[in-house]
Length: 372
Image (cartoon, rainbow, N blue to C red; front, side):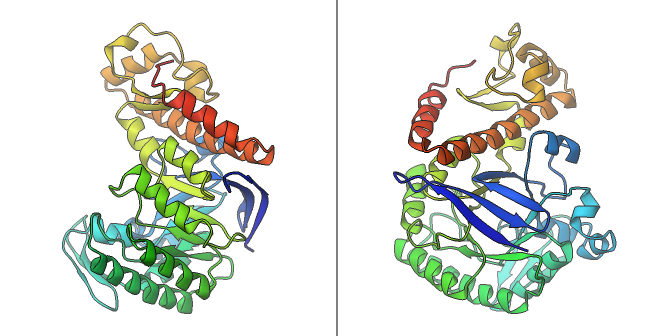
């Protein structure tokens, strides 16, 4: 039901190309996973997600647990049928949202008591409940319930979160029953090398089918992120997938791939799309700027998405200035396609033995910041 096959490794960087076999299809890695927090990728339909070649989407346990509830989704036949998406789905455990969105929360050994951001109602999320909810959703890949700390934090706070994350990971694994769902462990440890290494080794000993790297892209510098990835690259099993959680800026994707990461997700492309910020092969820009008023060219001539094929920057700027929702949709469409294509290009470069050249060319073009 679940298998990861490494097809090629860059000898210079360790970048990997692989295939992740799931019950709902094979995922070619490295891969960017669009985020469909509430069982939908914002501004996009499932058919449009297929058109941009999204291989897998991510949904959020915390949000779906609160609304509409796992019982309703189970009655619908599971999350795939509920949202009419027939390719793989990954669900996170809701741990990050419990700590960041729930307002007042109380961390206990059994779990976390928190207030719903919707109506203030009180709930108690445990590792067992987070696992049961994800099994009810029926995702292909589920996450252990973990504790993610804010940065900066002191070493003692990070140590306690690692110890709790490991205890909770054991409890998740003990109650997980679905053979058609892979449960990933999550490496925590903030920016402390020894804690990261200890957490990774303890999780490896538990023998999860895949490993996530959490607690990054939460305020640290790019160099700090890359240092932790360099640290974990030789430690995490080569034969199992690695997932860097919540990372989606193009530079971070390419550098993550160069450090052995296989999977990425982030709300960045759709969030940026809704405010008019576009990611392109020559950097990013905001379409609402006056200089695009009479620009008849596409967002990115190197992109093959619907927005770039059919519309000019001048028209999309007009949509934003007019308050038309099509503007946000087209920009979201482009941003998602760009990141998916970027990872597709990285994969092809790894398979063809030219990833270092691909990486250098990406940085050369993206860092120019030149509007196309």
